[in-house]
Length: 296
Image (tube, rainbow, N blue to C red; front, side, top):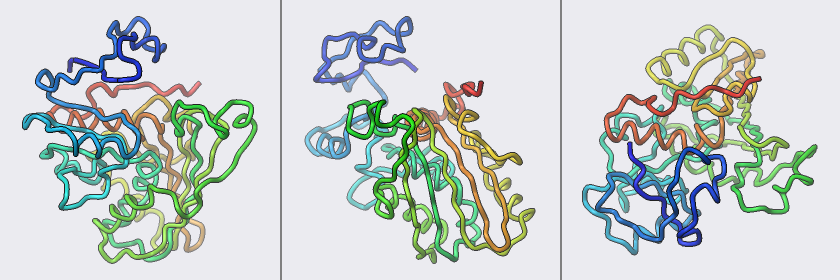
């Protein structure tokens, strides 16, 4: 892969390392206000929610150009657009044949991976109860009242309980595998006092024995490169700086508890976008994603 240009009207002319200082020594390019579509095969949209659709509606893209959008604009599949929902563990075959891909949300990725095997086996027959805590980077780089250090550090709070925007894509995916699913997903998002990662716990009614459930999960993810079932309760540092998702299964009577952990910026965003790029261009899906966790 060759990075041809990085477009930013507000930063045009500035060095990329002036904005993304962690890339110092890695890249010597400057931001540009130009859009030389004829020079590229793939365009990533890393735009604010709503802006990708405005751009697509106001521009004519070359026929050969493929698109991966990281915003929410096209995650709801519709006959009105060509975007495929880009969760590889759900739609890998369709992504390989797609032209436009809508990259999933970070919470949505973490929660879906926790329950997709159950949906495939039509085992989602009760409400899902979800508590997921996310790092401050999930709110983006623009400072706000709930992201600056002195407020976020040594603190915790909830936001958008039962109404988070990722619920729409979660429900869409679960109904794709289990059309009969019509139960509530009771989702409580939590702001954590750390920078990166999502730590989600999901519990639901389930009378199946743990050994059988584990086999269902292992079979579902057997040919997927980034999602793993672990015997030990996971922690965030095992996945931060990687494109991995770790799942842990526990039974308490007739309740199944699934713990799911990812890096919100990689598996929850840019890492998954690279995974989708690999699928679009028939590359081995782990190319560029052999990353080591910062576990110590």
